Amino acid sequence: MADGIEIGFGPLEQSGQGPGGSGDLVVFVGDDLVLGAAARDALGASGADLVARAASSEKFKGRSLTALSLPAPAGVKADRLVVVGLGSDKDRAKTDWPALGGFTASKVAGRTARVVLDWPGTTVTAAQAGEFALGARLRNYTFDRYKTKKKPDADDKSSTALTLLLADQSAAAREGENARTLSDSVILARDLVNEPPNVLFPEEFARRASDLSKLGVEIEVLEPARMRELGMGALLAVAQGSVREPRLVIMRWNGGPAGEAPVALIGKGVIFDSGGISIKPGGGMEDMKGDMGGAAAVVGALRALAARKARCNVVGAIGIVENMPDGGSYRPSDIVTSMSGQTIEVINTDAEGRLVLADVITHIVRSAKPKAIVDLATLTGAIIVALGQDIAGMFSNDDTLASNINAAGEATGEKVWRMPLIPAYDKAIDSKFADMKNTGGRHGGAATAASFIKRYVEDVPWAHLDIAGVAMSSNASEINRSWGAGWGVRLLDRLIRDHYEAR
Image (tube, rainbow, N blue to C red):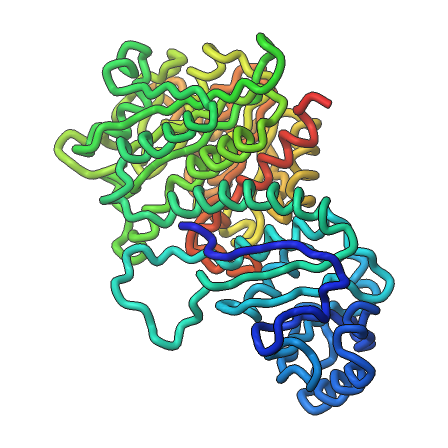
């Protein structure tokens, strides 16, 4: 849903020029409690002493991402003064700008505020202000479209309005528009993950992805008949237990030179995963509406690239299915034939995402001939056991691609950790009856799943991101309080921007 926040930009000279008696004035201090020049001017001669006395009374130490709120002093054109801590010199040297923006937005939710981006030792750049705005927008997101009653004491985030004050407000305004574009794309992914599966069934997901055509993205939707013609026996096997037909959506953004090989972004889109015949336990099964977080990230990333008219060719592909138990479901011990011609012995119908990815990847390798492939999938619980819910697992056959993804993760805060791919993991999925099994057993489950996918990428540079821990029900952060995180949109956008766009 919309972020419900208005963000504007102005010069530092406006720090003390707000209308009297309306809104907040936000200033920043380090652990030394020293105000910047613009904040001192806005608060007047007694401002620094007022902040020091209030900090002492409230035991506010100026630590990073802490805040002190107090009535605005006489003569200051604001209702309330909000002092946000930045921490030590070391903390300030590595400021997480989206996190700072998100934290600040949370302290003025539902209010109007002038935010003085000025403190000793730092001149806030336009790019940093844009990152601050991005964090504020993402923190303000809520998914409440199905709530018919709102708590009377809840903050009305839809009325939040920030004016960010800094030296170069003109350039910052341009960065603010970039932040809006990117935040809207993350929010699209969050909305998709948060939607209930009775609303977002495969056909509806395909329809929403097709809306990207309004931004110039070429859309192709494959229905079951076409998938059968192409021999997508693995994807179709997963879908055959559901009354909802599967879809494969291909999204092409042609922003680079004609004929140049694209980068392929591929997402697992299991709209709901019951486990099929190998049915999951009832406890927590409701979370399986989020088993399409990889597909949501790919749709969000294509939106971000198209909206900013990225100078590169990118193809996004999402396999959208439901995995349901039924008399027609595929079963353990079935053998299915993938589009590549390789046969798969089904050991566990709850290891379904890799079957979907196998056929989508084969189709893209053959039809698009990409220069690189990145797939995202909420693939295994094993990756959560290994890495928790703050970082995604990365498997890759190419050191350069892996390094670039890692750098994009560090830059955006959507971090990855490279996991091993060794022959023993590949051997674990060999089958007595077919070319491979769809699971190698409990041990090394994330790695054997990645080894399965690797058999379909041929010789294309490839990275697999297992995002089971970060895409849904992940740990809350300063920029996300939503069940669906929209994880991966910012990482993919940064990866393309830094390593594949024409200069």
